[in-house]
Length: 498
Image (cartoon, rainbow, N blue to C red; front, side, top):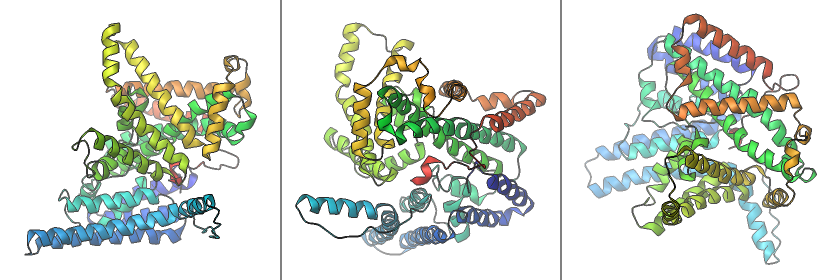
């Protein structure tokens, strides 16, 4: 079930209505049933995988708690707890790897043997990647690790814990919530709050704008060019690449904001997954603002356990590259994603290596790092570096990536930016202009957010007539300008494939 579908627009009000009619003590059971129905709308068979991950991590939490209470030696208790963690990690990661990486492994195994003239006749396995599996396995695993670290209690109520793993607003594309936040909230269900409902509605409207009006409109241009990249010039490919970074941001940020808004209406607070990342001045800062729930997950459960920055500069750089290698694989079973991840890790290493030289250059040239012009240059360079890596994220193969880069470098004609050529890439002049205006609006809102100004809070402070007029106008604008598709074919969110 997609957020941007009529099915969800019927489903969600029913969930809200029944949720707040029911007594608070059993409300979580209704939300659990609604969450499982929400996931079953894709393929009911994969509910077994969701249930499997839930049962394994639930039992691991109880097992860790049981070992902790035993009158054993410290060493034996630690060994028992680690065994529970190991079983949970192996089973969950094993399930994830089977569904996501089996064919990738077999394909590369065949390639390795073919390089030494040995032909392996291993057939491809027909596996459909279950939607959201990367998200709910990571969320469930974080619970196991938090219980092991004694940062959260072991939840005794299986159904409440199952709701934590499957909570429908953020089930299939995040944010990847921590038990310290969401599980504790589920233990104390909130009553209906009109202020929460208003703020949640505004969040959902902003998310729908990002997805339906902006991301899906940009997708027409990007898919047209990248879908037949050999037929387009370097100029068109460059524009498509610049737009793809914005499309990906709007698509994923749109989902996260809708999830936050839906949860807010139900009385729960989800973490903000993005913090104006395109206003970052370094690549490392951009990654602290982009997909915050995943990057903080890798920081807490991979980077720090590997040693973080506590074991010298070489080990620190190695740990960064390991994290971004895994992050690339997490996003997809393709070497293009691995290169994308390593490239972003490499940016950060090179940035740190060059820091002394940059400091010296600033001193020699008497530059003012606090000047807006200096910050603007840093922001633009950071975006361009990130956007270059997006070529690998969007292209289907490494060979395609190389051809696209070559076309951009060798066949760029600035005049094509102004002669109407861009209107031949799927969007006519009217839709292309609307896309540009919407991007400007996006950057204005993000600029305000970067300055600590929440536009929705400003709207909510206005008179009631202005608020309702604003909401009604927003709904009408989305309905009129949204990309709905023929016969209303709601477009999938990009991160559903991960």
